[in-house]
Image (cartoon, rainbow, N blue to C red; front, side):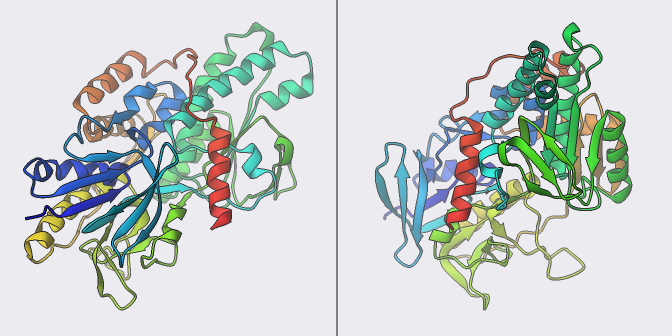
Length: 443
């Protein structure tokens, strides 16, 4: 009997957890497992702000795929298209070759990409914040700008170098600016040439509050904390242009800068446009509670599944309907476990189970032993929230050795930002951001 072939597209949190849960089935030859992923590792994205701030080493925030997924065929490449009727996916491998892969079941776990807007100069100027390369590059870039400011005699160039603009006041933007501002402040104090100089840190948010994922009281506390640290937070403000690094805002201000960080949200991977799957209003794969892709009338597509950041999964536990699960790690991991079971059930001809999960809460870490959190409905802030955040991420990181290294790093470095250490990147982050913007414009 031929083994059913399960093709998993993407090895982020959702795809990696699913593949790992199916590894024993693959080892026992109950299924054949193929995972398509362009990167050689899983990136634990909640740790990216700490990578940028130096609390966590780059290597401790990633998990190489080969060892934990040794019973799966790993295809290093990017998805080009999917024909669900013919059950064929086309993948472009790293050498540029296009390879057609047939399957019995396909799982869309492609994740999300940085959401860009048609703002003049954005694609050419901004740096994203969705990869370990971008986080490591950004930290070195900020520290290098401080060194440049100490060396230049041009007052305008010095001010420009010491201006850092973040666009997007969600979790990622708030955590990233909090981490980087703290490490930059420690670095600035080391330069006698910059005595009396001040850095200009700006957080731009179009809505009326930051960290909106938190309750309003914790969001307001977060705002006060950032402002106390010297970060200028501009609410109800948009970026109108950023050509040549001159950031023009809707309030009439212009801020020349060498550092523009775009963290204004994410969007489902645009490659979904080349897959004939039903889509929700925001571009996600439309799913039922069993994680099957479904048509508008609710009928499932045979052998097509989705989960994680690119899936619209109904939240049947919510009091007000319709409701959908937010794209976060706790949902991705739990959806993967339910889907692994449902794939076994589908192959065996059994009825499927539904994904139901009540949120454990939300966590945010702001460096310096400060954070904000809601755990099982209990609001926390300050040291308590910071500690809960650290414990959760140490447990959630899908590698025992990485957990150990992570804890050692926090113990040895959690209170004092590290000195700068050069980090080589596979791709210059502005080029990565330009590619993301071009892909969305094309689609």
